[in-house]
Image 1: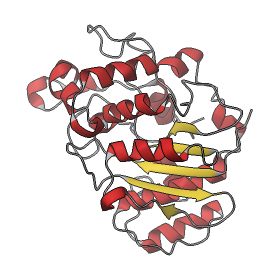
Image 2 (image 1 turned 60 degrees about the horizontal axis):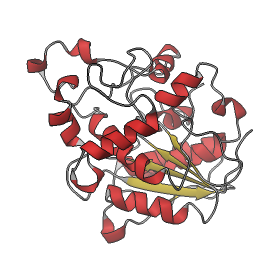
Image 3 (image 1 turned 90 degrees about the vertical axis):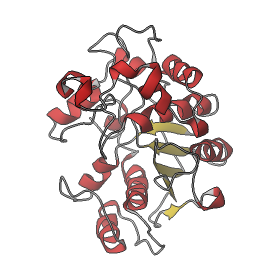
Image 4 (image 1 turned 30 degrees about the vertical axis):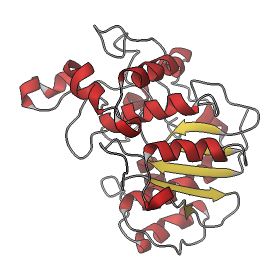
Length: 285
């Protein structure tokens, strides 16, 4: 089954501490060739809770594919546990509930999980030992690397500008709160109708649009509009403040262009165990 959607929303995410996050951007487009649009956040700056509220409130308006740019789960298959040695659940949705239970950080944050609750699993610097000992990846990430997709980030690396740890665990709290309203692929089966949440990687969209590896970020309107024709999309005329907004705008149109490809919904390398425990990034086949 290939799902049919009427709207496509890409969310560039943030795990930063606090309650308002300039690093979050939400872009949306409908079917056809119209340019995508940025969704205006309440109060001018998104909070993570506001994104969850917006998703729940709008998911019923039209069948929408929501894509979030964070890892939906830690590695499990290769290690037999999300946090080996610590008692944690053994499937994705149950682990999201666990993360939400142990984190009382503001605005669906999860920094406390990394910094205190399960501190020993995360690399914050040389004092933690050899960094290579923390570089565990999910099956999807290893598969993408083998395809030439570049070096994947690990959810256990908590330092540096490229780290995805805090954003991903904060995102798992969002998934826990939104799943009662919208299914999440591949942890949930594809619905015959209605909306769906998937994991995305904005660099996949940028590479598909012709951006070279290492230069996937688009930092001005000209760069974005050079990329949009790859997805048969009209030029974008609105303001762009930051590269994460360009990421979201381009990825929304890439989702519109690719969602009808049945191969993307049935990756040959994704087993039932992987789907249940680790999930998969939409666009990796």
